[in-house]
Length: 72
Image 1: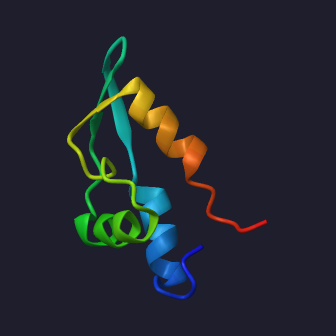
Image 2: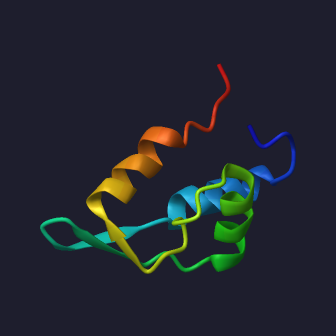
Image 3: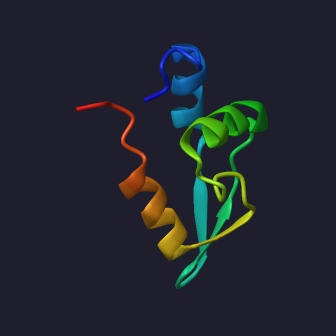
């Protein structure tokens, strides 16, 4: 999917760093810290809400359903 446009180190760091905290029934806060890597992944995947501070449950679920990192 990324066709060598992102280093594996950055991708692993993104996966370890990406965190959301549930604050209400259908509301989450993104507490990820590495915005540089988030920007790279956002650009390559087209997931515009990746770096949003507030996320709905639907956005969080959509992110994980649509972000398969391995090509079949």
